[in-house]
Amino acid sequence: MTIDQAQLDQLKQTLQADDYRLDVDVQGDQADVAIVAGPDACEECLVPKPLMQSMLAPVLGVQPESIRLTYPADKG
Amino acid sequence: MFDSIVDPTVGAPGDDRGRTSLATRPARLSGLRLGLLVNTKRNAADFLEELSALLESEYGVTTVLTRTKPSIVHPAPPEMLEEFRGETDVVVVGVGDCGSCSASAVADGLQLEAAGIPAAVICSDAFRVSADAMADLQGTPGYEYVTTAHPVASLSREGVRERAVQALPQIVGMLTRSSAAVAS
Image (cartoon, rainbow over all chains, first blue to last red; front, top):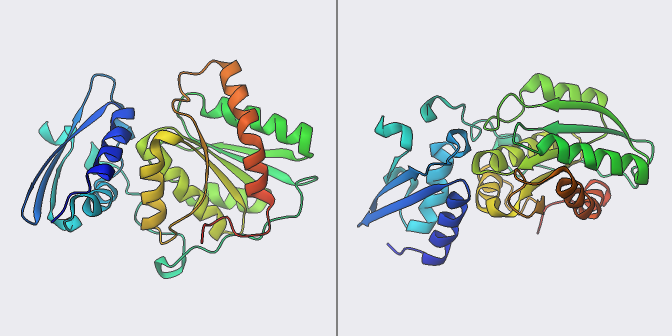
């Protein structure tokens, strides 16, 4: 497992443009990823989870299905 | 709410999720029917309206169809694509000025290409990651689109007009060049 820090930073910047923050915790071949909304975040601007997982997987060096992804609405 | 969003990653336009073949480009735009596929992001309609005016005055197209997608997340529904297929020769899609709308704009572009309609997709540069990810997921990595600086939503009408002027050469090139609009 190797995190591509440059790509991760790029992904964070992309999310930041929609006022989202990306929190990542990778342990072995599993990753916990939380996307946190800022005050100006547009709820519909997040891509669907399958697409987000496909974007995250090569960056985090894990399989898409090994990423536990939490969106702001999940915190309900 | 996010779980209820229709997933634009389902149902790729290419055959068997293979690479989407791009439509054959016309040699020139003069006399062609232009379609505009607009999303609901702020300034998207103004951006395409400015482009439409430029394409009409400088390249001789006629804008015959403008449709606004129901949401920024979803690709255009099949009935909307059918309208473009029946009534237009080339289509401009935009503006992908957020994560989900840039991805869905690329999905729209690929759907149009698969339907035989040359398309030029506009995304803002901050969202290349999600636009490219959608192209990859749809089996067409390297799909090219036109970028403009982020943000678009906060621009004045004059600012939008300037961006349209800047984007015009790329739009024309993407709609007319004979080579496929996909990087090798």
